[in-house]
Amino acid sequence: MTESIKLFQMGKNQHVVPNGSHWAVKGAGNVKATKIVNTQKGAIKIARDIAINQQSDLIIHRTDGKIRDKDSFGNDPRNIKG
Image (tube, rainbow, N blue to C red; front, side, top):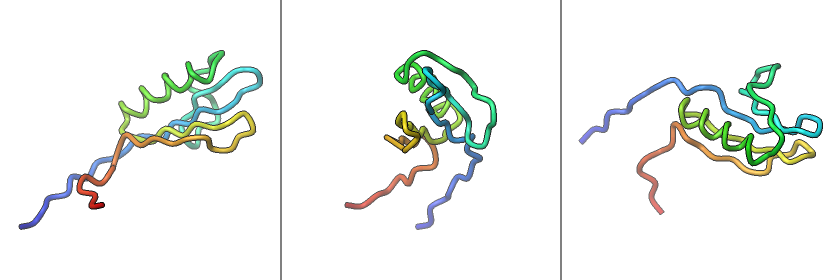
């Protein structure tokens, strides 16, 4: 039995990054922020919605810029054994 693989183009990964005393949502490789908000929680909500819509990844950064967490909404393998 052969499985057909559906290929599709994923959107840009969405990053939640510190921006002064605020938080920014930025698409991967973008210079300008998509949105700047007061809280990290608010930025995560916006970035998660975009990542779900674009079937991409959400990458959340700490205040020092290091990655805190990741979540994938796109090209995940369906049959994982384990």
